[in-house]
Image (cartoon, helix red, strand yellow):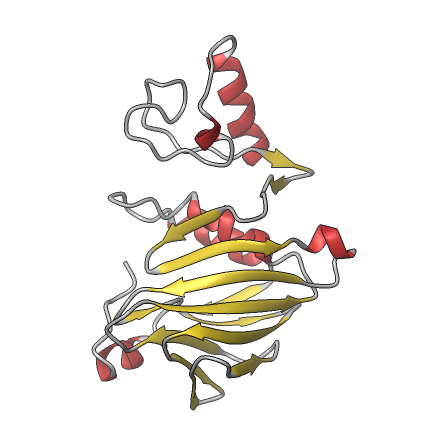
Length: 207
């Protein structure tokens, strides 16, 4: 899929110059593909997004900044820094097939529900999220929260970059592609299970 997008960009835009800000993905309303089309693209390497350290992506209420890529440690782990906007949920209810996650809070208070139990963590505290357990996370406060996410083993860090292509602001989500991306990374999602949390804590809906 991503190789096809990249080929389209190359064939359409041969001989034209791009700003460096479009190397990873483009969302500019005036110059996303060749300076003329409103189009989003991503360069790929070995069928994975060509991510650089400290690149940031954002969709819905979740921000992701890449800190350690799994390819740098033989796939054993990855580290990203997440943000969640005020009064927002970070993801639908889901569980991982292949990886465990550890969240270490830097700013604000992170809330997590897993196996029906709610946990909260403030700066300097962490929450462990083992694979195979349904969970989600949110920010019930009035300020953006920020936390480090350790993913072990790695590879799942690429999920956020791929998913961002199908959740463009101002456009309907591409549900089929979102589902396919989840399947690719072994993510099992229960879309309706977070509705109770959203209502209970007065959070903004996933949209």
